[in-house]
Image 1 (spheres, rainbow, N blue to C red):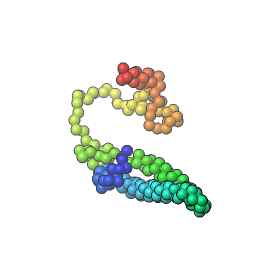
Image 2 (image 1 turned 60 degrees about the vertical axis):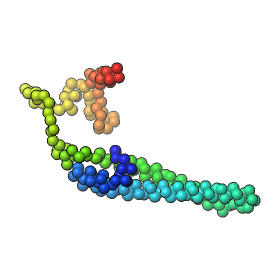
Image 3 (image 1 turned 45 degrees about the vertical axis):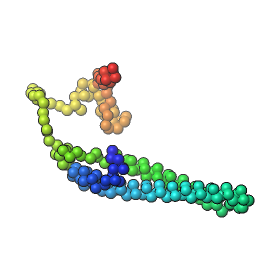
Image 4 (image 1 turned 30 degrees about the horizontal axis):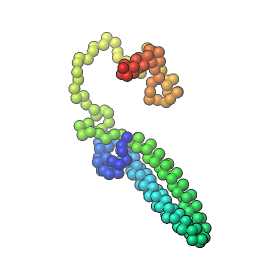
Length: 184
């Protein structure tokens, strides 16, 4: 996830780095992030200003009450201010949650040595060892795993959504053994 401080402090570098991905949607996503961050900062500034005003008014109420003067107008003002602060705080929390969700969708910045474009632009830098000569057509792991009873992708998708396999039988034992090995 890109740090919002980096985006705020060096937006041009972030834009240039993300432009190397050749994805036009990223530019509009960065614009949306900038607008959302500006709205959040304005709401935070307004909230802090209201809280400072409330603190000053609270001191004035205390002074008036000690002097025996009426403070009803200030108390009403404090009540309105408290409601506005509560509303602004909720808005800030909502904006921060939205901002975090949008930041999670922005990819990491590419290093200078990474090829420009998407994953199809990647190139092999070096290979090690000889590739095995198979006498049968190679199959991907998502076909082999269920066949061997190592994991169950459809059941996992129903349980938790896509992204993580549900290991079963020997697959679950293998994962557990690897974790124990690493812990030991």
